[in-house]
Amino acid sequence: MLYKPSAEGKAVKPPQIPSPGNNSFLGDIFTSDAPKDKQISCGFYKQEKGEPLVYTYDYDEMKVILEVEGEYTISDASGKKVSVSPGDVFYFKNGETITFETTGYGLAFFTGLRPAM
Image (cartoon, rainbow, N blue to C red; front, side):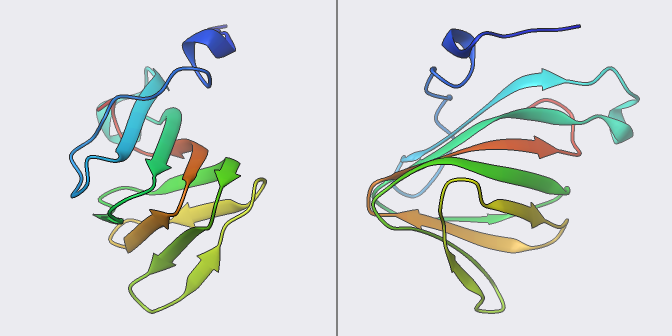
């Protein structure tokens, strides 16, 4: 069994990722020991107010929304737009382009079919 307390996981702001407003953060907590093409990684994603993040997935990923402050929306290229609340669960398929934007912040736990970043 591997274990990380909140002080090393949810309570820690994830590392910044390249984004238009430098207001997107993602950090892997664990990655499985499977062969590289079958590895899953999990961790936390935080989007803060400012520029939206438009991201095209090159792997399958699922997110569980943990915290929301302000208005937080997630939309896809087809025009489907969801006003996000804690407890909402998303599945983003390989190849989808998703836009994350908020007037406050949103924090999610994710699991993705990819090696560690």
